[in-house]
Amino acid sequence: MSGLLALLDDVAGIAKVAAASVDDVAAQAAKAGAKAAGAVIDDAAVTPKYLQGFSASRELPIIWRIARGSFKNKLLYLLPVGLLLANFAPWAISPLLMLGGAYLCFEGAEKVWHVMRPHDEVQVFKEDVPGDPAHLEEQKAAGAIKTDFILSAEIMTIALAAIPDSNIWMEAATLATVGIGITVAVYGSVALIVKADDFGLFLYANGRLGATRWFGRMLVRLMPGFMKVLTIVGTAAMLWVGGSIVLHGLDELGFGGLSRQIYDWASGAGQAAPAAWAGIVKWVARAAMDGVFGVALGLGLIPLVTKGIAPLIARLKS
Image (tube, rainbow, N blue to C red):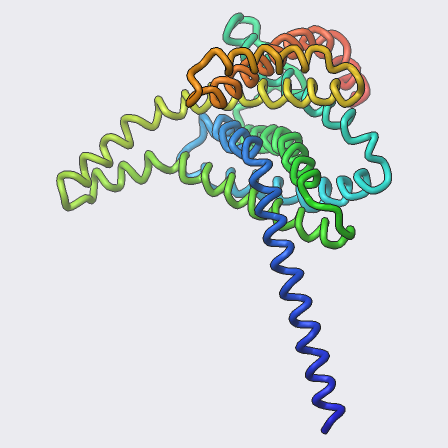
């Protein structure tokens, strides 16, 4: 009997330790997720532009397809690679992130270039789009998952940096919690955004109250303009995030002159603003300058990619 009681006492002690570990993981995941909030907003703003041109019946399946790719990006690729790099080759993290940031700058600048030169669209890493909707859907989803990979890499890196020193298993559990929670939040928000007009149409057609039908009509009218704004925000977010990643990486590699100058300019803008708005003005000024740098870098990469890298890849594929 005493042996059974001792066993139960040990089991209770293990359960308490496990519960404390779960609490620690949840607390660390919440802190790390908060640190990555800016990149999460960028991810949610970028994704809806990949759903333009599809019928309403295909929107949720495409979102789910992209979300599955995002889960794979975070949990199967980025989590183990991030842990290995952080513990065995931390020097490689910044250069790899800079490559991803440069790609975001290129993709965002490509959209800007197309607006500036609408009859001279740059086609890079893309096949000619045939009339087959299934092929177009596959191509759009693949592009969204590729962009998600880079944004997810930033999110997971920020989260990893925010985790206090602990063993690798605690870091893995925390990163997995952050990755799952952020993916659900991002693509749940995207689903709500892209289906808002359908919800408005349902309210307008089936609402029993005049106020309900009015609200539904307003949703239907406002969502096209909102989606256009969100597309602009998504492109700006790609340029801002990409530019800030590259600048931060240059700073870590010992070439932080431009990054420090931007910080000084942004601080000056914040000091010139009223005290209540100083923090917001400083953040907006720095984000805007990071975005301008992202545009310049991306536009500079367009001829390099179109004249050099893309033909090389095409030749290797053939």
